[in-house]
Length: 128
Image: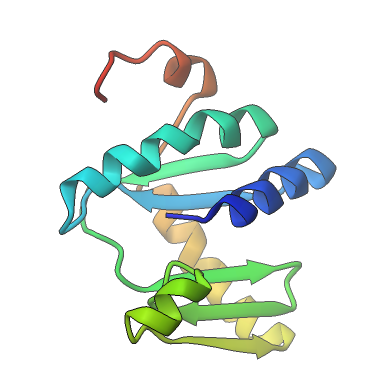
């Protein structure tokens, strides 16, 4: 789950370039967390963020690739509060080799996930 500023940054990047893609899980060891995460999807979709939802597993490892040159790999949801309070850890890597290695992994996850259709999302049943 992203913090407010992270969501705003994702939306702003999508409005600028339209190249923001997220692969999220529909499973969590905290079931309410999925409902909370879902309440932010509408704004992100409206901004042009592409959201894919995987149904196979809870995603505990997180990765970000930015502009094919910077990567972050970790367990914290990329939230400084979680790093400080929950003993989570992230590694930032500057370099195209790491980004190039991570992008196919992301693409494979996206291929096996369902892309959330913005118009369908707006009309989904309450509670889903």
